Amino acid sequence: MHWFIVLSPRCCGLFHLPSIPQIQRSDANSLYRKNGDLKELSADGHFLKGSSATLGLTKIKDSCEKVQHYGARKDEAGNPSNLSKEECLSRIETILKVVKVEYQEAEKALKRFYHDPS
Image 1 (cartoon, rainbow, N blue to C red):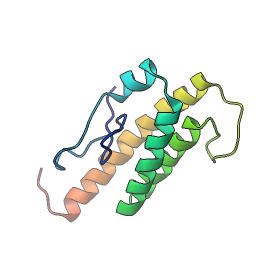
Image 2 (cartoon, helix red, strand yellow; image 1 turned 120 degrees about the vertical axis):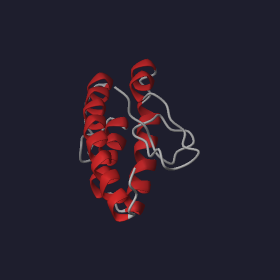
Image 3 (cartoon, rainbow, N blue to C red; image 1 turned 90 degrees about the horizontal axis):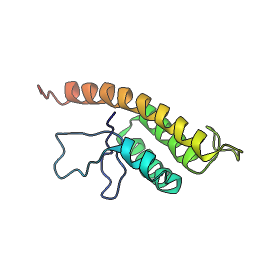
Image 4 (cartoon, one colour; image 1 turned 90 degrees about the vertical axis):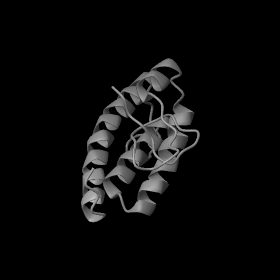
């Protein structure tokens, strides 16, 4: 499983836009399983939430917000919770699968809009 992040020079990786030059990419699965750094995942979720909102990618924004919340060990809505680190990582992993599909949908729509044949 591979996910990549867009626009973050320090990111953990969620999804990618191959047409944007100089994008930093890495394997998210190995990052969060190896390091399990919820704070870093929360920060990246926050960053991507803002970037996605700026681009009008509402579904991706909402999913990234969930990553931000679970990274802070909160529930999906951002309320304090007693979720374990492992449960938060598991939920983030599930969300990343959704983000990948949402990104593919957004990428197709943006390519159609900009008449990009690739």
